[in-house]
Length: 204
Image 1 (cartoon, rainbow, N blue to C red):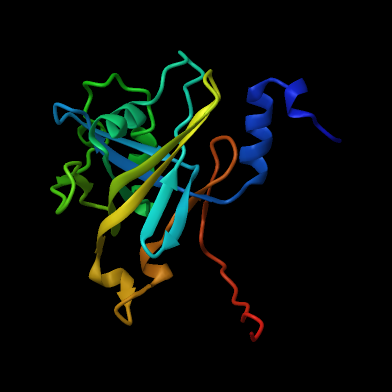
Image 2: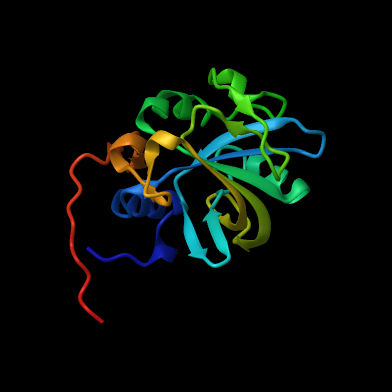
């Protein structure tokens, strides 16, 4: 089977992408609007960019339900700041609750039963229950398309990092079995990191 994206509805292309680009790490993004109202939402189009200087990206899509941008994108545009909270398996249900399309005045921390911690260098709070958090300053937003199903690439510089002691070893390495991250699959499916394997890189 072969597809020309221009011949399919964007919803079909979306299903092909999220079903085959797997597993995807989850960026649980906390933000605030100009008046300080907090927001928390998960994004599965998320990854690291580089380490010097450290940058991450996430990609909010324009909602198919009403054609509006997500509150997270609006907040980051207003304030230029956000926090990435890494999702561990015990936080899966709370993360899923925070994915609902609440109105802007709803505090997703409260709706999901989570505690908010003050950040050090940015205004958005952190998810206290998350073992790893990256405080970020906005670097750039790249807009791709304009209608439902289109999206933006939000790039931020990591300006402060929080790592819980129990997931850290050798001062700068993450203990995978302690972090217990989960990844996003297609539909309502997620995956655990339960059977990793090692491949040594070829010598230079």
